[in-house]
Each structure stands twice: as C-alpha cells, then as structure tokens.
Length: 404
Image (tube, rainbow, N blue to C red; front, side, top):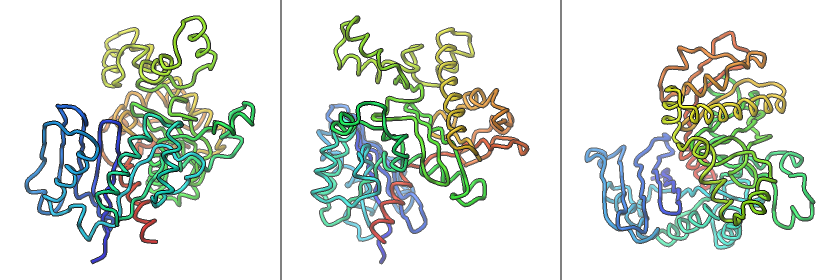
C-alpha cells in the first residue's frame, strides 16, 4: 500500500486547525478545529468527510483541553475513531504551517532537530505565531517520531522578490544585524491562487501575470509574474500594506514616535494599537466586513469612511502592481472578503477602466465556491474570484517533498 495521506496542522496560540487529505486524488478525508486550548470551555469540532467515519457525521466535544499536546492527542483519537489515525500506514507526512521562515527557509523543509531550532530562533520575527507553530511540531513529532514532518512557510513564496524590493531603505548594517527586510505572508495562498488563476484562464502559469488580493481579516496583495512573486504588500511583519480587519496597514513610521513622545504610549501599547485596534475596527468599531458593509449601506458615516479607506488602499495597490508587472492578465480576489464581498470587488475595480479592468455586475453578484471570471469578455484584464486552499497547498508541497 502506497502512503498517500497528509495531515495538515495549523497550530495557533490557543487553537489547532487540521485537515487530512489523500493526495492520490487530492480529496479531503477529515477536517476539524480545537479552540480555546487551556480553558475550561475548550471545544473540538471534528468532521469526517469520507470513509466509514463520514456516516456518523460531524462530532463536537466540549470540555477542558489543557495544552497543545492534549489537543493533538484528542485530534489523533478522533481520526483513529474513523480508522484514519496517526498510526495509519497510509499516512505519508504531517505538513505544518509555519508563519515565518526568515531568509533561510524558502522551500518546504523536512523537520529535524536543527531545522526546529532554526524555526525557534525566528520567534522574534513572528512572536505571535512561530511559538505556537513550534509547539505543534514538537507534539506531532512526539506522537509519531518515525513520520516525516514538513514545515511549509508563509514567507517562502515571497522569497523570490528582488533584493531592491525586499530591502527597506535604512542603514544596511543595522538591517542585516536585526534581519530587517520585507518577507511577506499568506504565501501558500498566493502560490495556490496564482496557479489556479492561470488554470482558469487556460494558460501555462509561466505565461500569466496576476495581481492576487488575499482579503480576509488579514489582507495582502502580491504581484506574480509567470508564477514567481516579484512584490507583496506585507513586510517584516503582517502589519504593512492593505487596510485590514484590525491592522492599520501602511503607516508613516513617525506615528510610532509621536505616540511614544506625545502620547506617552509604551512600545507594547503601540504594538497592540496598530495590530489589534486599527484597520476597520479602529475606523468604525467593527472588523467584520459584512457588518461594516451593512452599516455603510444604511448610511453610517464611520462605516462609510472605513469602507472608503479600505477600497482606496486596494486601488492604490492594484495601480502600483500594474506598474510593477507592466502587463497584467488578471486581478484575482480570494479569502473570506475577497471571495464573498461582491460590493468590495465592485468598488475596488470601479474607475480603473483605463487599466483594462471592468466588471460584469451580474456575474460578480453570483455566490459560488468555484473559481470564476467576473469580468466581461471584452475586458483587457480579467477579474477573477478564486477560492483559496492553503491546506491543499501545504499538503501538496509536503507530499511532493517526501515522495521525490
């Protein structure tokens, strides 16, 4: 029996998301979530999608789950109940989402002690994410020490940015000493969506230039030339770039100095302000685009301002990345807002006819989980909606690495 299954783990600070995929046909066998780890109100939701377990349907477990080790053991138990446990000979690898790979990790990497130590050393670059990623790896290795564990890095897809794009214009020695440069994030999404867009257009990925707009609570844009990222909006951290749910995006750095000197805010308070209390939330008090849109449609001035700022930043990046690429074949929307908010897509494209963009309003209004074009045939630049699939991308990269 050829092992063809990959368990994808996304370990957060208090949660674990997971999917089990069979790469023989790229199908999903199970998916689930453990949340509120470390609390009395922990919750595990497990959904078998194929095989004998699927007949029983979705299962939910409530009650305390002390830590990530307990969480992953609970996940393993749910999978085992379906006959797809971690001891299955059909399991080829565990694929781990790791947010920050620095400059060292630009490809999926089989994890050994040295690799794990290097991922741990990158925690200062991603203090909110890499610690949880490391914990997930450690626990998974302890549960199945003989199984290949593969790290797939959010930053890897953007490592192809030219040096003059990745560099900030600060003292070079200082930048090198503290690893300050633009890394970019959401890389697995941008990689998957850029390839899927080429397929939608019926062209080889090498022949297609796309602007990918990954719009969720976190949001990022990328310019992808022939399948290779040449520019992206997030930088040293996921704070730079677009207006997001709770993050400010692009900001004059002197705002930080002003808040410290005049406002008396500490570094941690400023960090919290810009990452957790800004963006749509800071402008209007809501970070859910559905609620912001509802309020804006009802005439709420704060929501209208927030929506206008959000869309304006999108337009700026579409224009800038058109200049970077020179020729654009498609602008593609993905992730929660990008895939579902027709009004945001319409507003972002409006007025960009001189760039070759146009929208078919009827097609744009259709809700679908399938990749689709929402631009008229005459448009010089296609506008597409392509649902992202980061778990499938992680599984694909992990499986390719362990079977090569």
